[in-house]
Image (spheres, rainbow, N blue to C red):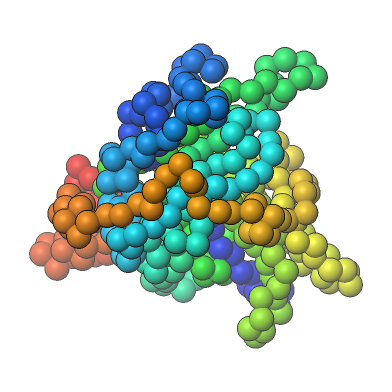
Length: 328
């Protein structure tokens, strides 16, 4: 708690699924290919090209949801999220909105201040990635690489459950461990296969109502998560203590200056004009399909830690070290 203020943080994590091909076409997801080479009419959004869901991506998404204790819904809907951006050739992104793949999970992590804390996972849904705008290739020009268009992602959204930037970082490291253990993603932030957006607000200690939140984007390492959220928390406290009001906006973190700057005012879900994708039928998963993914989940770190503590009379700390990766 910073000087009578309480910090409230919720995280939205985009995780690239570990597949050889994209979410709705057969293009390769390999990292580092020359710009605009892993593309086809489907991921370029050319007229008449139809998407087809990637079964392996759906298996991994269901496995991730089960590993996080979510309820996987037998029926979910693909929706179009409409916005105009140079790296989005279709003018919309295929995502899920009103009926996501999975809801109501949780993940426990070791908080530096509160001991074992639990974050709620409000929803986990499947979506495709957009392309990438590159601002450093040509002087005074922006280049567009569409190789990432259509790369399969899951978005994992927590409740406003973290009370410090350090807690947010610890949760992310715990989430990374679970997803790597289960073979769902390589979670490499440098390659963009795990990206984090954070909603941050502050309130006076003892208050229950949430303050006005901002969204911090462009955080590309685990160390920067804590730095970026600390900078934004301190900025909001300074604004409020100076008698100002916090504007609901999207902030970009700049790791070179360790500062944040406003990018745009924050949009609401209705701004995206979500509607069910007419090219894709509802996603219907059988009980057998979901049950099979459950059997393919390995023993996850928390369970393994408990087993090591009981079986070998180890301390929690020693058990945590031994179960840090799956070879343990």
